[in-house]
Length: 175
Image (cartoon, rainbow, N blue to C red):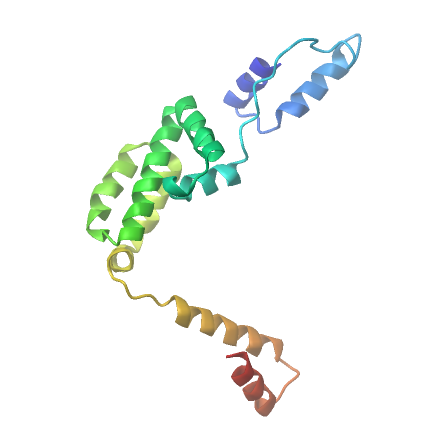
């Protein structure tokens, strides 16, 4: 059944392994009792969200089990290995503020032929004038942007209910 599911996925099937298994079990004469006795299932891969979280973390911050998971993923697919390398290089570039390496990284990402990275490169190229300084300069607008978002929220909460004096008080107390 595992091979059948893998073949279906290769042909574009988006459903889970369990859906395929349940469908096939219903068609067996003995039903679920006799279905695939003794068949060993390969361990299910971790969820995409967990893989993304592991890929984005610093290698030195990972525990032994997480390192093992990453090693297993990287060995299972050359595309995942390349993706991990690209993610770590970009994260290091961001952490160490070495934006001068951006062009070389973009070339590697395009050469990888991984659609998600190519899409990411298109977005960076579109806004490269602001991405380059963001990866190089130590200044950040993060705090200011956070305050502005907080003020907008307070303002939205008062729409139609509050006059200016009350809005003023709420804004002053929010900061």
